Image (cartoon, rainbow, N blue to C red; front, side, top):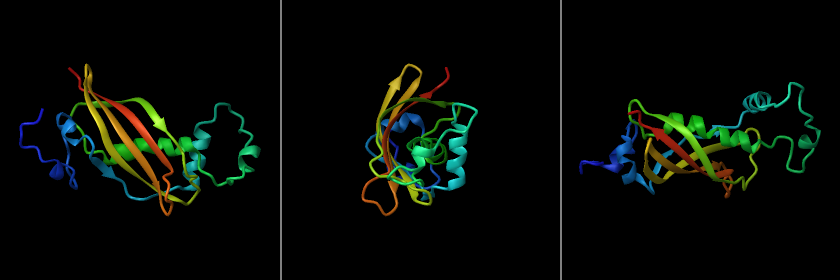
Length: 165
């Protein structure tokens, strides 16, 4: 645990890294906010191609004719963005540990996101609990949609940080 000299404001500053043992002191705090990320058609198409369950192209007729629009970005693509956003921005780390996806508690898509829209992630640490294998973190991620009063995706994500013995 903390030695009493931990300063959360400094730890959350640019270029800082935070040992996992300090995570309880950050509960309720914003861990990071990403830069704006453009929803690029080529990457969305790669995602769709990479997730096909069958070798034949899926019949997209109904999807492309939906009333929301053919350029609507898949919710699962938005969800998949959490991994690189956390890998690139989350300041919590301890050398030698690794993270396992423990589960999604709640995920919604209240505002449609379209190709060329921009999104950014605001990650707040909701809980940091000691676990027999390390730390179980609950992170509230809000994928903001530029120019929209509603987010593209609020999502509570649990991550188990394994601390090898």
